[in-house]
Image 1 (spheres, helix red, strand yellow):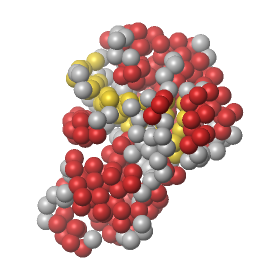
Image 2 (image 1 turned 90 degrees about the horizontal axis):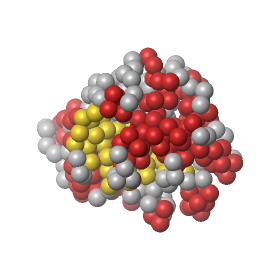
Image 3 (image 1 turned 30 degrees about the vertical axis):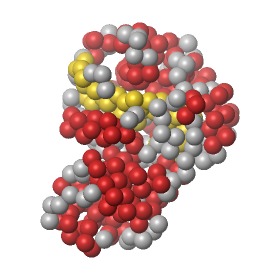
Image 4 (image 1 turned 180 degrees about the vertical axis):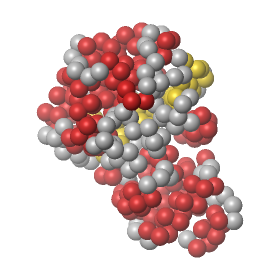
Length: 331
């Protein structure tokens, strides 16, 4: 690690195989917290390259627990986090809405690292027992169209990094890695980035991975569609800027979609959207994100058709039904 850290401090970039080996060493417990902190800080200051990130991804997937859900052609919706906006769990809520619209969803996530509440906080809040059992995840997709993959159970290397990330209290390359290491390697993935530079970066990364991807970023710095202003979407087929009015939705303020001060606050909002008792802003922001996830899988549909499908999933109770069936299967 001394040689690698020396290279980073001097501004050099690392080859994909080099960071692959670094990740293997971290996963195997061969690096101290101080070494990991120095490595992550140096990468954050200089900026990680596409090949460096892919090497880290290679190492995490190699040392992790695989799960084959390819026959279901699932979708994942996930953001990088680290945008500092403290929204409620929009992507997690959207996953249930999309599943309620008839699309198989294999959500990947973890506990909060740089925000109040992470996806795993919400899922565990439902009373769900997190598992690596591939058969259980297959049953979930068969019976309710949704399953949840808790990153630390699958990506063993994350266990050795989690304390460092919490202590650093700033985004690191693991914010970028998280969305790329779903162990089922979903066919479709809607990714959220906090800025347009990250969007371009993720575009290059995903072109190498080969996923059918969509990347969204709000112009004012959210790693999701916030409806607080214009947002951009990038796929293999297009790059386009939308305004909330293009979806038939109003513009909201940051306070309208905050996740509150505690995990309990964020959890209550998550459930309330699915139950149909949330504020209009909370509902609309989930509809917007769900619509673009649906559109990624169903590109033949117009965006407005996808908005209507997302709205129907909530208002008909289909999204809530998915959640209840998932909880029943996994409690």
